[in-house]
Amino acid sequence: MALNGVPQLWTSDGTASGTVRADIFTNGAPSNLSYIHDLKVFNGKLYFAGQTNNGGTLTETLYVVNPVSSNYRISAMSAAMNANETILNLVPASTTRLYFAVNAGSSQKLWMTDGT
Image 1: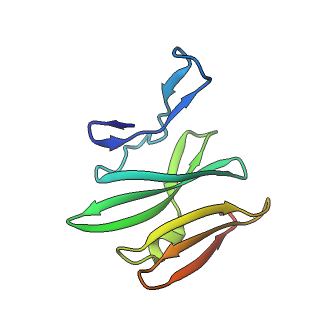
Image 2 (image 1 turned 120 degrees about the vertical axis):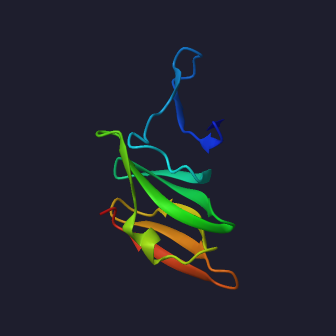
C-alpha cells in the first residue's frame, strides 16, 4: 500500500479496527522509495528489500526494522551493491544466518548476514 506515492507497511490482527499503518520510518521514509518486497523475520527483526529510483537508476537496499525501537536502518551490505542489482529471496536458513541472492544482470551472487 502506498501513501502519497511512498510504499507503507501495515500490520493487522485480522479486524478492520486492528489494521493500522506500521510507522517504522520514524525518521522519514526515503522519498524515492518506490517498491517494498521480500519481507522476512529473522532474529526478531523484520528484513525487507526496498527499491529506490535515483534519476532513472534503480537501486535495491536491504532494510532492517527493529520492532522494539520502531526504527529502521539500511543494512551495511547494501553499500556494496551496484546500481541495477536486485535482491532476491531472503531466506532465514538458521537462527544465525540470513541468506539472499543478488541478481547482477547475467549472474547471481549469494549474500549472507548474521543480522549485525
